Image 1 (cartoon, protein in one colour):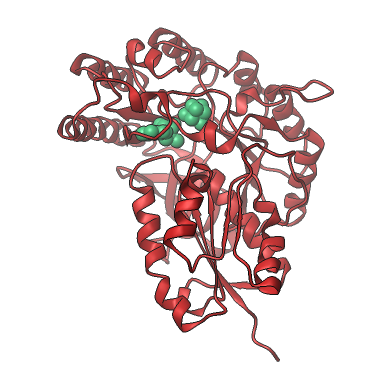
Image 2: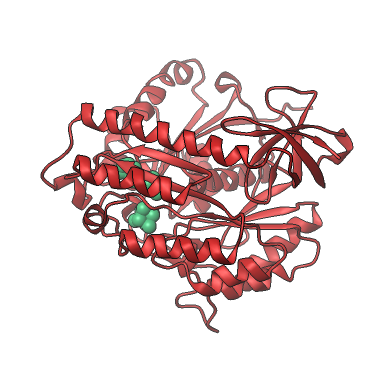
Length: 441
Ligand code: 5AD
Ligand code: SF4
């Protein structure tokens, strides 16, 4: 029998890119390729790139350079580069010129055409470079090869209309487009029939879901519809923009049994002055008011956030306002970023760029405060019994199992292997800085 052809795929960046890679994988498996983690074994190598933060280009160039030798050894090897970075002005041409052994270059809007590009390379022996400037209609029905068989990400909308001044996403992912609720429900029902228990609804700004759809529907209504799907155990969603998170969504979390008590609500900065320069469309007070409302309606809610330090013009006072906001909100955890200049974004040409030393110093102070609060929040779980969806063996200790609470906390615990894929009750025995330890009861 002929040995199956293999592909290797490497993904940088956010959950959106992960999902695109799952689709590329799904298409390749449908073409009877199998996945490998060893580049040398592969007959197709795909790099799915990201451009949200700096150093991304250098990483991609370095990784591409290393492929030259492989291509010399195997002329049939197909090398493809895709993802957000290819949507940036001039980038695809740079790759074409600098790396003549790259066969296929495509962007975020036309990944669904990958089988066609592959065919052209193989049949016609040409190089393919196709970047769509504008977002296309949503293409449904692409096979998805998911990493887990217990929890899945389901994209409900693409793109972003917000144009935060530091961010490239609106330029590389295009304007907001929402999937039809029927298509989302269909995908979730198929996942349930395969045994999936938890889904995370995905979008850059899920709270503005539904704009332009007929008949009209908003995010809160979508949540309530999905909550009615039988067989599903848990629903999460990300990312929420504070300016768009409505009371209706808060009430939906309160009312709907499957909706987990967890919200990822990026604040970016605690200073109203900086938030204005970031074009976030809320200020410190509005954000804190929203947090008060959430905590009031959803006791023990898990709150996480994204924070950027060193945005142009950020003073020591602005930064201290960020620290004080974090202490006031008491996030369960936070993704912390050093501001990085992104070409073509308004913040890149702002004066008063902050020097590296100050940025790193603020970053370290920020991480200390975030970690201290995470540890304190984790401590509150000691002695409590929580519901955990068991995902598999623990990463560091195979004699234990791992899973997450409804609030999103990672738990490593002693339990029965037969519980994998099930919801179990776990008594928390010890809180660590970034996870909890416990025993199944
Ligand atoms: N520099 C630093 N962090 C950024 N993010 C987005 N763009 C930048 C940038 N230019 C962060 C934001 C966003 C998260 C996904 O990445 O905090 O919420
Ligand atoms: Fe970027 Fe702002 Fe859109 Fe998030 S909301 S993707 S930070 S522009």
